[in-house]
Length: 336
Ligand SMILES: NC(=O)C1=CN([C@@H]2O[C@H](COP(=O)(O)OP(=O)(O)OC[C@H]3O[C@@H](n4cnc5c(N)ncnc54)[C@H](OP(=O)(O)O)[C@@H]3O)[C@@H](O)[C@H]2O)C=CC1
Ligand SMILES: CC[C@](O)(C(C)=O)C(=O)O
Ligand SMILES: [Mg+2]
Ligand SMILES: [Mg+2]
Image 1 (cartoon, rainbow, N blue to C red):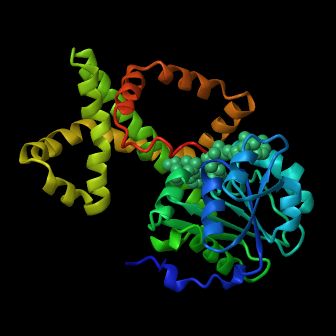
Image 2: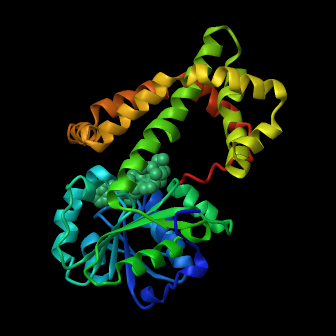
Image 3: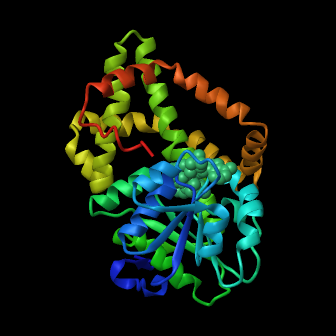
């Protein structure tokens, strides 16, 4: 293996003993960071805006809650885990005035530092710890005794200890159970945006949607189309996750494997890969970031239009009905 991987045995967490970590926000990532750190023995305070709907949930989980300003004042490490588009304004108003020398400012994604939207003072440590997966799954795998890989990067090392703090933090949220490796803000930001757009979120959902629509438009039952093009994706991906492509192909029929080789390249073509290259370029030169921020600043008209379209789509309606008949599917997982 060429990358240096850090596991629990390689990480000394004593650097955070007696220190206070403020988790700003209580959404997907934040609730998992706060609860995992607390369960790993760290001191945690959750910083929330006034009137936050999340206060009761955080308190119910046994966490102490303070205003963002007070949490920043008290804490040694301030982890900013609110939506990327909201971070600069909250940082300027509620965090920067209290971010005194010697503290550490941390992120779960490098977007705002990399694109120059947050410029922390020179006398604080700045690092990121980015778990490679959704926050709700970060909490689930931690409570299952497993872990989710993560990557960390140091942008500013004012204390000379920023790497050790970042690694201790990564271990605290459970990432060093699965493996943690070092990156830069640039590499994390660009690869994360590329992965979520091209493969994990944009790629997968649009592939499923196109397959589902093709079957339904050809007259097949939507329920069968749902099982075939969506539900079974998890079962196939679980095998890829556990055993790689070869392991998955061992489990499927020869008929399926032959069709995989014949038809896969007709669906994901050389042109698809060339387009992925153009997507990556838009990410690298800031074109995507600009488009995202513009939509956010106008109240997300494009994003809301897309959400509205999908809400009424048959794949969503049929899917909800079918999932409601499957009580073993974890329905509590996304409650926070
Ligand atoms: N979602 C994920 O799994 C991943 C996210 N990340 C990164 O983690 C960070 C957080 O993302 P994510 O967890 O999706 O965020 P969420 O959308 O889940 O964050 C919601 C939380 O942010 C708070 N919030 C929203 N707007 C404001 C505001 N203007 N001022 C103060 N608090 C606000 C909400 O407060 P309230 O409770 O009061 O409504 C809520 O607690 C981002 O940098 C993201 O890129 C990284 C890896 C994966
Ligand atoms: C895949 C999307 C993600 O990058 C993540 C869960 O890792 C995100 O920004 O939510
Ligand atoms: Mg992301
Ligand atoms: Mg990600």
